[in-house]
Image 1 (tube, helix red, strand yellow):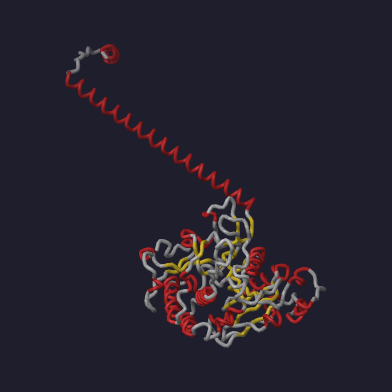
Image 2 (cartoon, rainbow, N blue to C red):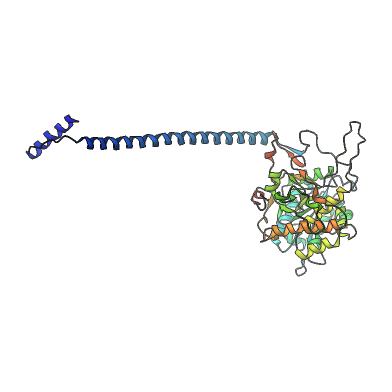
Length: 451
C-alpha cells in the first residue's frame, strides 16, 4: 500500500510540479474500509453459494423432467407397437364373452347394424355425417342401413338428392344393394340406403321410438345411435360392433360418464335417501379418468339392442314421468336410456354358485367403453355446451333417480364399473393411466372434477 502511494506521489509531481505530502491513514479509516470489503466479500460468497444451490437444483429438476419425458415416450412407443383391440379382464388375456350367454335379449344379427342419426337444423353437418356412415363406412364396415330421425315440425325432411347430389344414384336405386345387387362399383357399391324418419313432434324422446324397418329392411337388431355432429372412424365403428355382438344386452359406446355422490358425502349412501332427495353429480371424462370408473355411456355414439327402443317407448316398461321430464327440459334422454339399460340388466343379476370352484357368475354389465377414434365437431356447440348444462345434467340424475326409486326399482346407477376392466383396447404394458378418451377434447371437461 505504501509503495502504491509513493507511485501516486511521483506521478502527481510530474504533472503539477507541486510537492504533495502523503498523510498516513488513520486507524479508524482502515478499519472501516476493511469492514466494508469484508462485508462485500461475504455478500458475494453468499450469492455465489445460492447460485450454485439453485443451479444444482434446477439441473436436478431438468434431469428429472427429462427422464420422466423419456420414460413416457418409451411407454408410448411400446404401446403403439403392441396395442391390441378387444376387451380383456383386468390382469387377464382372455377376450370378453357374453356375461350371461345373452339371456336378456334375442341374439343379434351376425353381420350388420343400423345407424340412427339424430339431427336438428344442422344440414351441412347432417350431410357429411350421413355420407360418412352410409358411404365411407358403408357395407364394408357392417352398416346395413342409415336412418335419420327428423323431428323438426317446420321444415320438410330432405330427399336423397340432398345427401348425394345429382351425381349419386337415387335412393330407389340403392334398394337393390341389400338384395344382392353387386353390379355397382367403387363408392356406389359400398353405399347403403338412407331413410329419413319424420316424427310427429319435436322431442328428444322420438329418437328412441321403435323402427319397424329394422326387421323388414335392415334385417338387424343392432342399432348404433349417433348425433349428427359425431363421426366415428370406420375401424373403431366395426370394433365396437364386434364387442356389442358379444354383449347384446349392453350399451357399447365411446363416451363414458360417471354419476357419483359428492366427495364430502361418500361416507353415506345417497341412494338410501327418501325419494326426491337424491344427491348425485354428473361427471365428464377427467373425473372418469381420475376415479377410474364409470356407469353411463352416452347415446351420442353407442350401440344398443333395438329391444331397448320398445322398452323406452312403453309406459309400462319405463315411467312416463321420465319422458315428460325430458320433453320439459329438452335434455337428458341419454341419461334416461342409461337408467333403463342399467335397470334392465340389474333385474337379471345372478349370483349362481353352481360352478365347481365355488365362483359366482359375472352379472350382466350395462356399459362397456370402446377407446376409439371419434371426431366430434359439435363438442362446443349445441345444448351440451350451453350455460348451466352441467347443473341441468346433475338435476336430471337426481330427478330420474327419484322417479325410478318411487317405482320400487332401486337405484340403477348405484353400481359403477372399473374403467380398465370394462374398456375395449389393450394398452401395453398396461398401466391404468394409459386409458384415453376417444376424442382428445374430452380432457377439457373439468367441471365438477374435484367434487
